Length: 116
Image 1 (cartoon, one colour):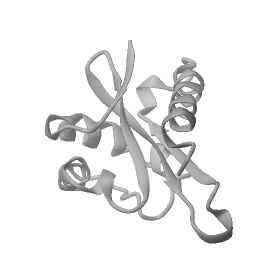
Image 2 (cartoon, one colour):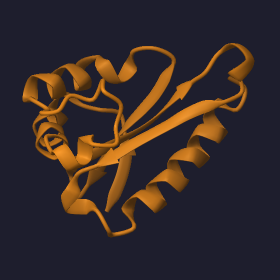
Image 3 (cartoon, one colour):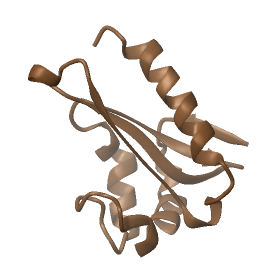
Image 4 (tube, helix red, strand yellow):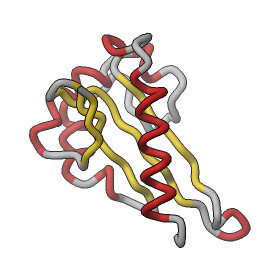
């Protein structure tokens, strides 16, 4: 079962376990640490996921924090657009999880933030 929700302090261990993989990090921006230590995960769940004009959620699979999905809302001439980003731990690849998750997340973002 896949659930999207805010990050919680207790997600740090699972987050670090699933993010600490060079195959996960290889196509992500340089701000995504690789290797991904537990301290980075602790910072992310405590405050990092909320910094800036963003909306980020944890991807929870069977109770485990398996990844993250989020949007960054752009400004100026791009004010009606957002940049989508996501990653998922390698054990969950190839199962159609992100296709379903992206569709659900984007629908929620349009419903919640369409006036932003």
